[in-house]
Length: 271
Image (cartoon, rainbow, N blue to C red; front, top):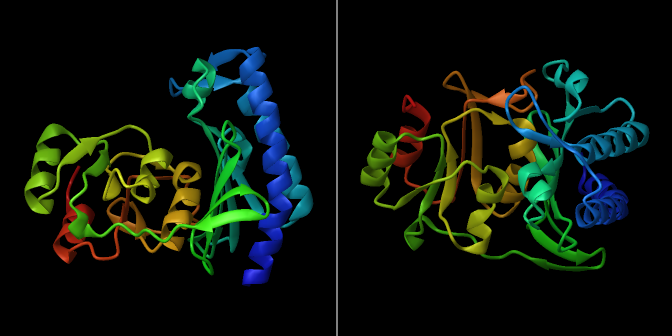
């Protein structure tokens, strides 16, 4: 897909992001939603489903023939492996925060081309700003369609900031600290911590626990646009985002100068 095609898609998406943000802000402010529980024990709201329907209808109509996978649409979770273009949508990333009235929830839209994270949007409705990256540009932070700044900061391994990990038991965290010579901080949040190095609080992110493609595809595209390296694994083998799955069991997003021995350990360790 060409840079022009990416630009056209982003420009088409932007007003729809703003409309989604307007609806979500209003619903959160008015508490005009109900909260339920999914089979995995996570929270879900009426707003999640409304936004799922909003994005599924828009994307399918605008890009017929392209696969769209959304967290809240179980029928979309089955798709043909090796599909060339796959969209991954998380209508509300951080449903618990949304339900609590916190501003720290997001809309995630990622597009993978031939299994690679190639186009990523992280939209924060409460601040009405968009973090965006694709295969041709440097990551950008938009505050309006025509107002953006490029993110030039790329964290180096030498900066010695903490490494954030998901799903690592204490012994594994201790071992990581001894190998990386970095403090290791535990987290359960994926998207927010994947992009953390752009704001400076961390060196990188590693997940040793099952992660959904809709949680990591968009942030991975954004971080690769910023110069980072990312990778997903299934059953210990390097995987692609069009492998017919919707979950991976390992993921990393690390600086370009991460030592090879650290990458090797992350790939080969048994969590």
